[in-house]
Length: 347
Image 1 (cartoon, rainbow, N blue to C red):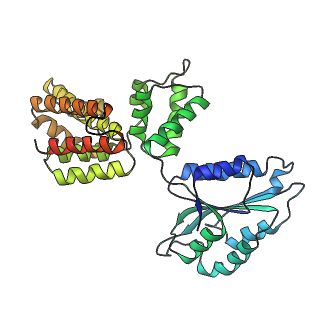
Image 2 (image 1 turned 135 degrees about the vertical axis):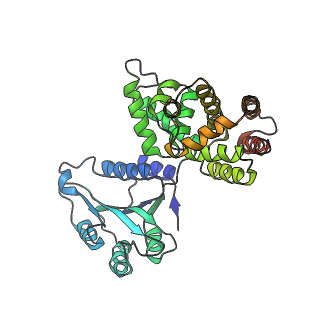
Image 3 (image 1 turned 135 degrees about the horizontal axis):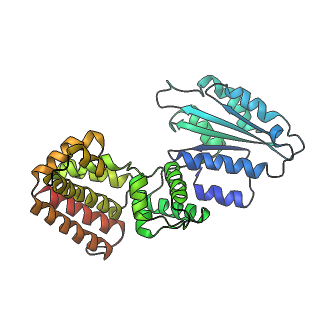
C-alpha cells in the first residue's frame, strides 16, 4: 500500500503523468476537492468536446457500476475522458457504506484492468483503511491522503492566496487570522477572499480588520483552557492544552489567544466596573453565547492584581519562545507554554 502525499501528486501532475485511477481521501476536504478539479482540468485541457468527455456520479444516488460503465466508454475527439466518483463512503461499522461488499467483484475487475482512455477519480467522504474494500482501493488506485494542515502549512497557504488576490498582510495579522480560523483550509480561503475585498482599495489586510470580520472557531477550546486555569484544574488544563497543540496550533499562536482571553477578562471587569450592561459587555468583547455567564462571573470575581501578574507572565513566556530560552523549535516552544499553564493553574 503506497499512499502519496499532496507534494507527490503535485510533482506527478507537473510532469503530466496521469494515473488511470485515483483515490483521494482525508480530513482536508478543500484540498482534496481542489486536487480532483486540478486533475480533471489537466487531463481535459486539450479536449474540444469537454462536455462529452467528463462525467461525475455520486455514490449517494448512483451505484458504482454506473461509474465504471462510464469509464469504459471511448472519449470523443480527445485522448482521454474523466469520470469522477464522489461521496464514496466506506465506514468503520459499514452502516453508512455506499460502496459495499457486493460491489467488490465488479470494482476489482475494473481496477485490475482499467480503461486505457479514461481517468477515474474516487473522492472519498469517509474511508476506513481497515475495511476489505477500502484496502482494494488503496492497493489498486493511486491513493493520495489529504491530512489536515499544520499552522506553518496554513501560513504558506495564506501567503499564496494573498498573492493571488493581490492583497497583503503582515506576519502578525496572518498568524492571528489562522489562530481564529483553525486548520480548515476551505474556511481560511473564504475568509481571505472576504478580507481582500473588504481591504480595497489599498488591499492591505490589517489586524483590526481581521478582528472585526473573522469569527473565532478555536474560541471554545481556548475559553475552556482559561476556565480550567482559573479553576486551578491543572490536569484538565493540560489535557485541553495537549489537544489544541496536537490539533496543529503553534505554541506562539496559542499563547496569543490565551493572552487575548485574559485581556478580555480585564476589559470585562473594567467595563462592568464603569456600569456597562452585561449584554453590552458580551457584545463588545464578542463572547461566545454559551460562555458569557461564566466568563463575566469570573471577571467580577478575579482580582485586578492577579490579572496584571498573569499578563506579565504571559509576556515573559512570549519572549522565552521567541528567543528560544530553554530550547528552540517546536519542542522548546511547547515546553514553555506547558510550564506557563502549570504555573497559572497553581495560582
